[in-house]
Length: 267
Image (cartoon, rainbow, N blue to C red; front, side):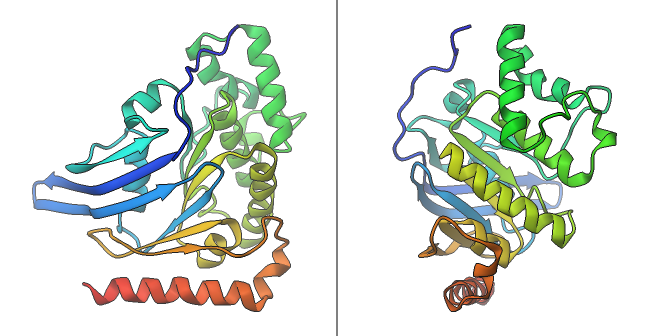
């Protein structure tokens, strides 16, 4: 079938201007984001880092049209998040893999394609392609409970890639995994990004992970979430894990820590 995704503007991919978001609760208002301004260009790998509750995930959810700002604006591909969502401009990977246990891995990946109306041949081809991208070829007929936690997250990423969105929003997808598995998935994600040239927005609590993965690191303050620093990484796009021991890597990590400390100074 013809790809139903309409053509929309590509530059800048994401732009936040004067973004504020306040939640009304029984205990009073919660100021989640305050005066957030940011531009993400096509092909960027942007990590958001900050203390728990600083609004990292909230910001990602605003981009995805899952939360509505109180004031200010966010544009995704030059249009509102709602229009971008309806245009299937992005895939979203949650903290937990969220795979349906009664569906096979292939069935989980096919689900959004079924909802979108792709025919069976197109579904099969896309499932094959994305399983190859995340190095899970041959696991299509397995069930989630038959896979390790890291493999389940790769299947979740495959599902987000299935309808070929140009933007990938990732909400701390590796946070619950052990360090060895996390390192391996970080390497795989960088390789995937290099092959697909997608724009990735990635939430993390890990300074080494943010520095290792990103072309741009956005440091956020405690609630209400503000951006205290935006760090453009000078590291090459091809990054072996050993790069984490280099002076250049450690210098960026130090700047991230300083940005986090600066954010606390405003409390």
